[in-house]
Image (cartoon, rainbow, N blue to C red; front, side, top):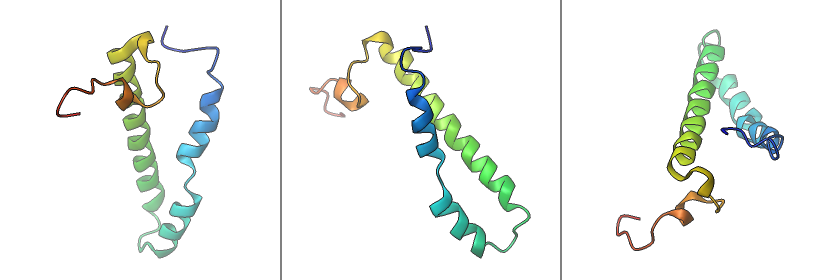
Length: 84
């Protein structure tokens, strides 16, 4: 099952934290020369960010499945691997 319905609503708080950009977006919008194209650039940046987060979550789920027990994925990887 791809959605954990028991803890599904916990992701709402994380999504607000992830997309909170008032401290970064507003100052950049104030100094940008072409303000007409700024909304499309912010939309593209947020879409790309959302795709990256969803892709990483899907990769972790398909890699570990239900065996993902740690909150940080690096703790699940083998420690004897030199690359890790």
